[in-house]
Image (tube, rainbow over all chains, first blue to last red; front, side):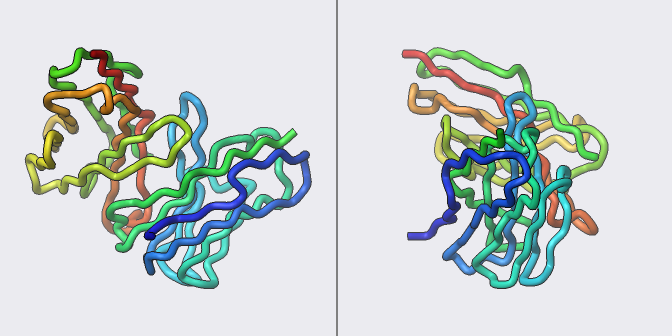
Amino acid sequence: EAQVTQNPRYLITVTGKKLTVTCSQNMNHEYMSWYRQDPGLGLRQIYYSMNVEVTDKGDVPEGYKVSRKEKRNFPLILESPSPNQTSLYFCASSLVRGPGELFFGEGSRLTVL
Amino acid sequence: SQKIEQNSEALNIQEGKTATLTCNYTNYSPAYLQWYRQDPGRGPVFLLLIRENEKEKRKERLKVTFDTTLKQSLFHITASQPADSATYLCALGHRGSTLGRLYFGRGTQLTVWP
C-alpha cells in the first residue's frame, strides 16, 4: 500500500530533550516536506527536500533540522525542543518537485512540557 | 510571503445544496493551486489541482475555478452530502526559486446537515 509513515504518532517530552520524528514513503517520490499545524494558523511549511541531499527552509525552520540521506526517508530533528514547538506535525511527499499532489502522513502530535 | 485567505472559518449547508468555498490570495501570482480535504485528526487528502492557464477543473461532484485577475479560486461541491463534512484547504505553489514551497490557507470547515 502506498503510504507516508510517521513515527511516533504521539509524544510527550520535556524541554531540551532531543527528539527525532521519522518519516518514510514507499512511493519513490522525489519531493518531501514537513509541516506543522496549529489552531488558527493552519499548515505551515518547516522544511522541504527536492531530492536526496537537497533540503531547503520553509516558513518556520527555526528550532528544526532535517536531512535527506535516502530518497525514502526525511526525518525531522528537534535538537532542543521548547514548549512553542508543541504542535501537530505532518510529513508529505510528492512524485514531482513542483510539488504536485501531496501525500500526507497521519501526523505526529508532539507536546513539549 | 504569500498571503492566502479562505472564506469564513465555517460553512453550514443543507444536504443536496451546492457548497462554495473561496480562496483569495495576495502578493505573488501562483503557478497552480490545489485543494485538500482534512478530517479531524487526519492528514490532508489531495482533491484537485488547477494551473494558472486553466479556468476550470472538474472531478465527479467537485469543481474548481481559478481567476488570476481576481486572484481567487472557488471550490464547489454539488449535491453535497453529510459525508462531505470536513475542513477544506487551499494551497498555492509557484515556479522558479520557490518551486518547493507550498502555501496553505487556514481552511474552511464545512458541515452538511441532513
